[in-house]
Amino acid sequence: MDQESRRKRRKLLPMSPKQREGPAEEPKPEPPAQKRQPRGRLRRRWLLNTLAVTLVVVAIAVSAFSLAMYSYYTSTIQATLESKAQTAAGMFRNYTETAYLSTARQFVSQFEEKTIIEVQILNAGGRVLMSSMMDISGASTHSPDVVAAINERAVRPHIGKDPDTGDNVISASAPVVYNNTVVGVVRMVTSLRQVHAQMVRIVAVTSAIGLIILVVMGLCASYFIRSVLDPVIRVTETAKRIAAGSYGVQMEKKSDDEMGELVDSINDMSMKIDQAERTQSEFISSVSHELRTPLTAINGWAETLYNGEVRDASDVKKGMGIIVSESQRLTRMVEELLEFSRMETGRFNLSVEPIDILAELEDAVYTYREFFRRKGLELDYTECEEELPIISGDPERLRQVFCNVLDNADKHGGSGGRIEVSAGRDGDDVVIRIRDYGPGVPEEELPFIKYKFYKGSSKARGSGIGLAVCDEIVNSHNGSMDIDNASGGGCVVTIRLPIRAESV
Image 1 (tube, rainbow, N blue to C red):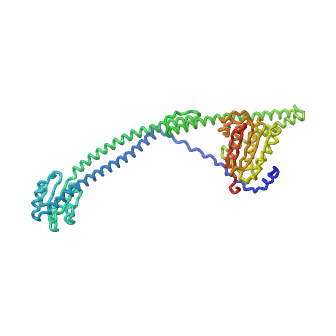
Image 2 (cartoon, one colour; image 1 turned 90 degrees about the horizontal axis):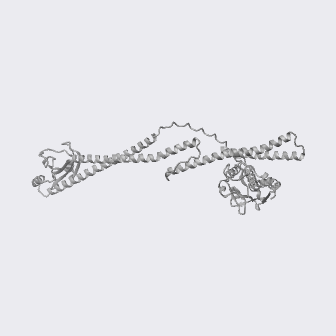
Image 3 (cartoon, rainbow, N blue to C red; image 1 turned 60 degrees about the vertical axis):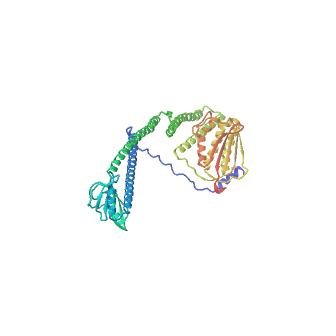
């Protein structure tokens, strides 16, 4: 397909409405700086919170342990009393109703644990017949375990206050059954005073242990807080120095943990800010020089022609040509600066529509071919043999990319005398390659070649933002732009643009 037919095809393509992005949001005003708190307040708050949590945990642990021990003691004593009462009642069942009382009196008098356990023998009405602790014969007991044992004919315990004495006791009552009739009750009783005294000692010991744990946790928390906050304070001071203009300042890394990573990030940020500051200064100097050179030429020739110092027609034409050429160079520089400004402020918009990418590429080739020919530079364009599908894109922006890359190939690789342009399809991408036969790019500069303001060791004119703008445009089309040294010398720029799914 020739150049004219591609132009016609592009004009006949259906144009979709321009999809412009909304205006960039105004930057939000920064919140007012908070009042600086006295140093140490965070340390105290952190320490108090840690100790408060530890105190709650220790209190819960001491309480739970104390309750568990109390339950263990009471359940053990209760089981012992139930067993002894059941054994004694079972022994008395082997005697007649009247004979068991003499046996019971002998059992009570010979009971070995009478100093800590009281044994009571009661009749079927709940009246005490004999006791191992004191003479309370004839007294009635209203303890619920006695009533339950008589009514239910089974061993029944009781923990709590004795209804008759008011003491805190544990008791167990077992009925004595003869001929299926309850003739008496054996009751074992012990006071809870020793249990309560033992519980006081246990609570005191566990509380002391909890206090020791609290002190140890306080010391550990204080050390940990200091190990965290001291580096944070150093980072804060360094950040303040950077904010005050001490770009490039570095901190000493003392650990390999998250704080060490934070120090590395601060150091990296400081170096990048310092580098950006130097790059900005170099950019201002470079742009000033780049603007001064064409302005000097324009101003000089304009004054010469205005004063009539040149009368020869060929010299006048030459001077006008220089003015036009330098004006065009100034225009390109200003356009690059404007594009860069839009990129920085978020106002970089695309007008996406269906386009014939080969037609846009051939427009750029056609524009530069005659210009290169006058400079003695050969531009070879390999036409694509297959018909490439329509893709979605901004034609003006993509044409700007092609022109910028061709101009860059002329500046940095024109010494090779030849520039090659080719296009084709690779899977779901349209691939465009532009190669020069110049000296190429030093390997150590390749990773930075697309950075804004970066010019490397090149002595060619330029602001250093052209390739950065091109890369941003291609990325906005979901494509990629790679710059590498070609085998056999020179540099090759590879541009990949995705094909619309519905066009595949």
